[in-house]
Length: 277
Image (cartoon, rainbow, N blue to C red):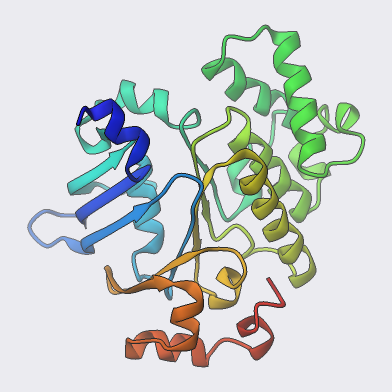
């Protein structure tokens, strides 16, 4: 079967034996130790674990992004739509980031440029990846701001990040992430800095956008309650490894790994029922 056919019928993302070493090669930190998983087209997959488990490193490895100031060495394979991303040069990755794979980071205040209006920041991404005029890009930016729930989007497009609440800034980041209709949206702890009510609103927004646009969703979180009602498949990470994988309902009902059981025991019952998500 040809690579083109395989890329259309197989998993959108297939990661195999992914290792990540950070820091001095003579004494590296082994952040990922043989991580393997699939994400199908249109599927929502969760990655759950405590801080340092490797879930965010996994997300950044897919994007080929290193933590600020860190030197990361990756090995294994990250096959996206038939191409191994670890074999691409940086110019090829620039065409994929934002256009085919996009990411929503956990801290909207530090992820947005404070001296650019939010509309200009969305315009910039659109014009970088799509053949649109400045006027067309702005019209799309306004449309996207409305889509993610920003009231009076034409006016708010000319506002700066500090003029938005935390929840509204996260909505702006989501608008940026979906601006070029990516195939895969990675959400790295997208609700950590938000209060409980706003968390629920952002999670519902991500779920609605995924359903409406047919995107695949890779959801990174430390909270089992967040994946309840959000994903079909969950991967539990511990010390750089995936220690349990399964359909989310099955993992909730009968966790196989002791670490998974401990994570679930620490999850409030409201979340475990799926009501809070």
